[in-house]
Length: 211
Image (cartoon, rainbow, N blue to C red):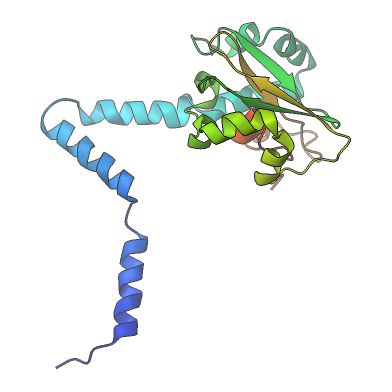
């Protein structure tokens, strides 16, 4: 008869559960399997949608736009003058980007985007909006105490820095153009785009890290 080793079994239990998907993920997988089994949707269709939102409709689109603005002064001017028109050069256009304004961070100015009425968001450029962006707390506090909100995201600005808060609507949405990190001279657009984060294009991230 084998001996009982509580510590060993505890470690095994934690190991197994650490590799399990979260409860919401399990529910989604169960619903997905049931829908496919019932013939309501094809697995290929689900895979196509997942690929589109993860690889095409997502922050990488916005990152490409930002990277182009860093390397092409003429494009930067067009982007800041009329962002909705400028992004058509990438083939990025649609209801969520028809009325788009690009706002640029500088050494003494930081831009932060929110939507106090609901959660309007340029999802064609940034993918699906994060849960915190849609929360009542963020939407209210970003306007009332933006400096404190930024601190909670790890962004501490000097007292002399100006913070501009932009309130998105169904008619006008915003894209923050972060500052280009030092030490990236000579980098191509693809390499630069990999530095750009979704949060930096909302304004809750500022100093992009060069790895």
